[in-house]
Length: 267
Length: 219
Image (spheres, each protein chain N blue to C red):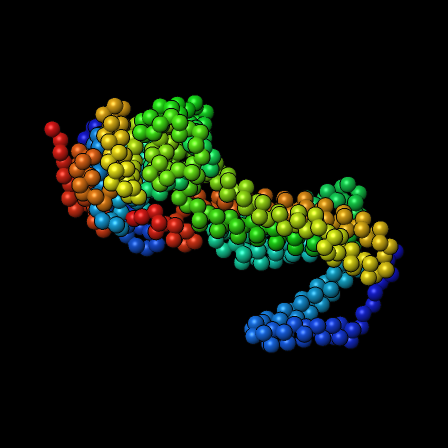
């Protein structure tokens, strides 16, 4: 059993000294980030404190219905957040929502089914949070790249459609590139883990006094779980989202994001 | 509508971003070679894209050999009415792979050498990388790629816009030869009236999305 660390509010406040350093550097170098640093500090305090109480409530209740409600809320919020990065993709919210939900449900069901974790709130909530957070980032990067690639490749896509390709066939190279964009960051960080950086869970466990081997094993489980969930989220998001660019007749839609390309088509 | 019309347009309108691009077009395009002529922004390229359903009109109907385009299976239509876009947009890989792409979609074999020769290219082009070609060569490979589909109609969007005079003359000879040897119907978009006269029996002049003149040179 890991010994819990108890931090006083004063100790948390002391860590603000580093925030002050960041703000001072920004001020000194005219980076104009002081306001953003302030907002980030306040938001992180408020959000984490609030979620801490929510998690405490869910842990105390230890009922799967509350776990499911919390995971659902995280999925919805994650889809809203990721939508901001996927502005070039029409109606990106629903593909993102479905992708995050599928990644969360599939991953949690698998880790419970395989006996890696017990179906209890104290396991499902933190793992679910990590899964959704990483899946959100991957799906957002994937759809961001998708929107950019479609805008840059309208001539290529239409030339392929003109040869009798379906929209799926015309999009195949772009979907492949977008999927790689979403998955590569986590794959790369997994490759370098332990060499260049210590991942958060392992650091947390070591700080809490866990045996290093236990910390490593848990971290490995989480890294492998995240690889699967990120792949599921990126794939689902892209397979659902690309359809928004096309009509049922395999025509590239006239979209604001593609307007410059539309102008290049000539009138 | 005449019984032999290749395309028949009725009240065809199209908008892009709230701007009227085509405004109530109604005319027929007969089999043979037809040029759509006009200045930039006249709606020529948009009209060409409506003819193989890369886009649908906001109003009106387009008929192909008497049938509403929307009634036809769209992928088959695009193979029968093949469009060669203005900008070369070849796939990564060799010329042969580019030519084989269209036929492979409907599980047909590709007569690469024949398509290359018809487009005025040497058979040795087959194994060259698409990325290494000049713009003029890319334009010809785009034409060969469309011909590999063995289409009944070729839609050509400014086929010589990016070429020098010599390359332009060569492409024009190729198109006239195609028309004579294969009886492929041609619809050619060009801003060059002289080119339209050289290549087409019918010339439809568009300005601001409307048909403003038609010159027929039928015997």
